[in-house]
Image (cartoon, rainbow, N blue to C red; front, side):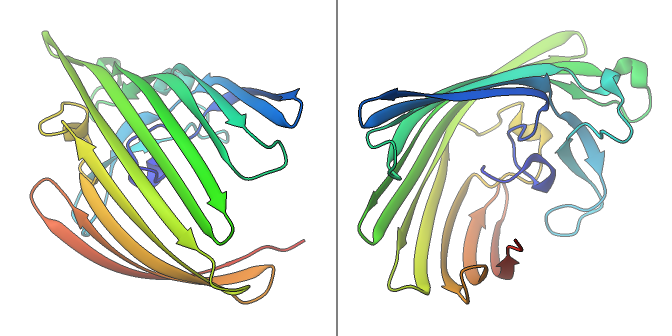
Length: 239
């Protein structure tokens, strides 16, 4: 669920518009707030399913080099975080989001219609010495026009991730994801690449302060099948 929209995620990840954020300090603690308003994603089909199929429906961001604003509508997100120690890593909070997602008609652009998606969630990040825990929970509610009817649905999804720093270079981690009430949800039925549950384990090796290798194994459960995946990635930062 945390994947970006274009990579198969179910939540509009990017907004093309404005962002306002700030921090309110209270002694050693702090509140951090973020408000974004802008054009959200369009739901459209593309080639290639999550197993190499012929078609896949994904969320697509507005292309700033070829902006077609009629294909995208405005949405907003507000997030509030509390940091017990303003200089520390621990934080928890919540957010709300509303997005009007244009569902593209492949044959007649005039038949495009808008999906209303409301999201509320909570999150937490806790670190103590070598152990770090990260968790998020989302509740999604959708309203989808369907010919002469209106479909309504809702479900929730959550994950928790644990990381343990063995030393300056090795960090194993694991993540569990689960969805609840998503069976036959009208919004999820429009997106064919969302795993309803997933288990993942991996290890990161920090080569230098600017480079890292990551080996990861995941088991994902879809509506009608399961999939296993190994992934090896290298990341780097140039300054």
